[in-house]
View 1 (cartoon, rainbow, N blue to C red):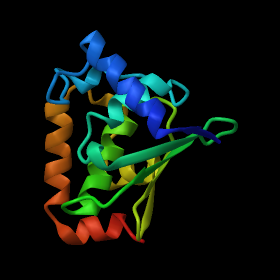
View 2: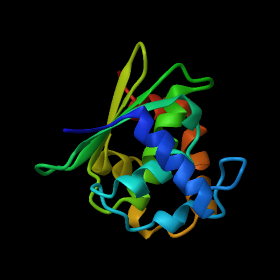
View 3: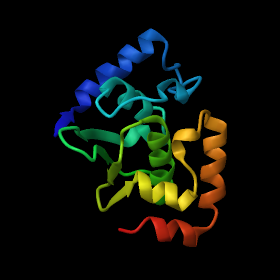
View 4: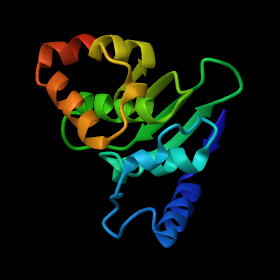
Amino acid sequence: MKKITTYFMIVLLLLLSLTGCVSSNGSSKDIFQYKDSYIGNNSALGGIIHLLPQSKEFKEMALQTKKKPYGMELEYGNITGDRKIMVINNATFLFALVKNLEWITFTFPEEKYTLTRDQLQQWYEKDLNKYTNKKDLKKLIETNTKDKNKVEQLIKK
């Protein structure tokens, strides 16, 4: 598994900032600039992660690229707000943007959640690859996370 250190991520953010991909407030004009990225593209993955909620608490990323199914582990510190909603949101964006990503494990200090592309697409009853803009994807997430029971069915410890 390939580990990307926090140091590398800081350097990556500085480079992205210097090239204008990330504005001074950390947001992007369009996260969909990374549409059709691949799990092996560390720059794209780092760019996506740092544009998603709770990016300030992001600590480390480990990629599984040696054998299928390809996936990633994302480690976060203590985040504010609902972790399960954050996991759904961030996983939805990552699966919509990264073509060959099949699973994601989100690790927090006291808990860990794993979601697969198939799980999430069945839950939404939508193909996430079809989404081409942030507005429509956010609407899908908001509509489906209103029901806390539905969220609990998807996200289990």
